Structure formats: C-alpha cells, structure tokens
Image (cartoon, rainbow, N blue to C red; front, top):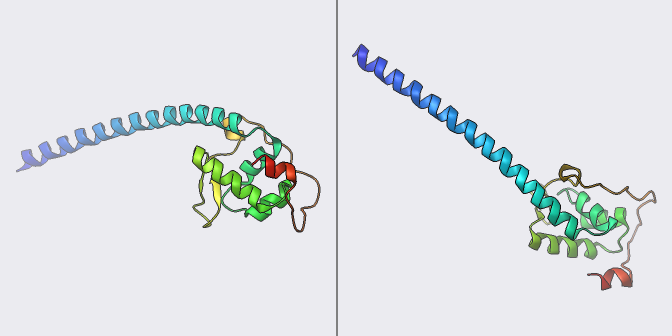
Length: 140
C-alpha cells in the first residue's frame, strides 16, 4: 500500500511538472499573440483614424463616457457623430460594447499602448448643446 501511495505521489508530481510546462508555453504563446495583435491593431487604427477628432473620440471611448460627453469634449457637433463612429468602428472590430455601461462602446486599448500619439484635448469649455456642422455630416 505504501508503494502504491509513493507511486501515485510520483505520478502526481510528474503531472504537476507537465502542467507547469504547458502553462509556461501558453504564457509565451499569449505574449507573442498579443504582440502580433497589437501590431495589426496599430495598422488598422492608423488607417482608419485619420483626424485628431477621430483619434480623440476613439481614445475617449472607454466604456464610461457618453456620446454627448465625447461630442462636447471633442467638439464634433452632435452625439450622433460619435454614434456613427462607434457603429463604423464596431464593424471594423476596433471597439466593442462596454462591459461597464450598456449602450456605450470601449476601445480595446489606448492609442499609446500601440504607439500612436493622442492629440491634445481642446482647451475650450465643452459646449452645452452641441450641433453638427454640414462638413461633419458629409464626412459620415
């Protein structure tokens, strides 16, 4: 019985070592997959966020800010402009529905995490009731 217990302990120890080895390999795989994914994400963001306003809207899309807050901060006009960007970006796969707040979207990572520069926030006080310009409507 003692030999059987020793044998089972040895087998469990070998299995534990094998699991630790698998865990280590999975950690390496995850690290390299994330690295490759971030490089691809950077390219997609650089190709699709072509203005400072788009970059700021993306950066502020953290799952907490409302469309009205973002529109007011970035001064794009109406919150519908932000909604339109979220719809477009959701189809591209660069934002996802917020895990924190229903009806809001969040980016996968900040622009800085992928090596892109975040433009400065406007210094002007947010507008109380934003209105959309004809140029912004045409660009949508």
